[in-house]
Image (cartoon, rainbow, N blue to C red):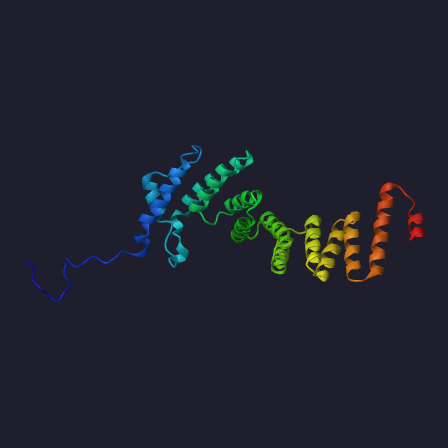
Length: 269
């Protein structure tokens, strides 16, 4: 017989555990999903049940120090990199379905795996799923903000989509922001600078376009096409004199390349 006391009974209902422990069963299911999905590719290592239980603790609910336990991060990242490598290998062999599965497993283990995001973005872009591609590129740039290659691919995709988008203005502005970010990482790339300038001109940002095209000419002084694009931009804003001067410079460069008489070119003008 249990005596009633003023203290809490030893048989009182147990209080629910902390959020981290309550999350373990569902996260274990995620890990087991990775194990079953990985069976199609024996080259990818999968965790044992004991390791799966430990990895389940990696995912904590939001609010618990960013939702991660840093102690187990290296394990998850290592497994994520293995799946990413498998995905890249499959993509290189034109096995997009297998590559996509591997990249998704990699993101399940480490949602901040920028390389896996880019892998999914490239597959989505090839299969005309532009919105999915843009979402993964955006995540990749966010996870790896100093990776210039990812930023350039994202900017080029946005610029391409801006040409056919219903919301052309906002998409064009997004492309320009992406190009600015890419150029802040990759400096001195004439082709990238040219694409930035053409995108700015396409969306009516003529001052930015002229600045970029001048930079492109400065980076590649002997490139005739760069000068002609700059001349076209001056034509669009009504500065015929500047356009004519730049075209003359372009003809002079072209004549030197072809061995023509520079004086004769000037007389023609």
